[in-house]
Image (cartoon, rainbow, N blue to C red; front, side, top):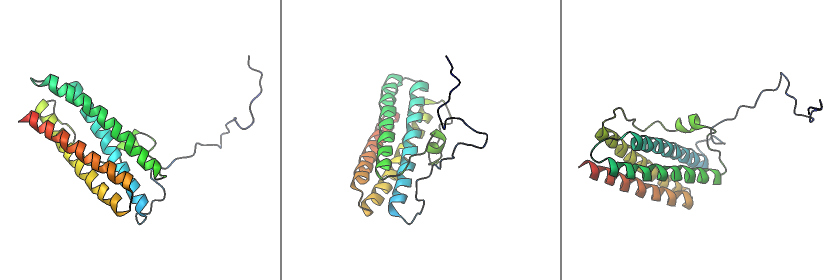
Length: 177
């Protein structure tokens, strides 16, 4: 039953508006090495999110004689990319920076990856392995930055990402040959 009482401070007035949150890491100075590293890690997290979605959609849409192998492989891949997204986010937070607040901010943090433009299985896999290689090269570059500023956790994880990306790209290319 409603008593007509309200908790102090919970009433909204016409003047109160939700505070807008900035999706960018703070501070934004590119001269500060840790801020630069956090932006680069967020960009890698964006790539992981793109790769997770792309591999999951290939998993669902692939048709062809290699269906079972591709279906099993892409199932493993999208789960791996989800783990990568989580780990990259944890490293960013350990640097005391914020991840973007929603998928729009996250996916806009990196626009380098190619999109599948055909339901042709071969073309989807070519796009995916090219993106894996680009993601691996970016992880290598970010790992070098992490080494320069003495962030061994980020450096080591980026090295792991490089290995994951190029091993997966090799497997896709082997399926295509």
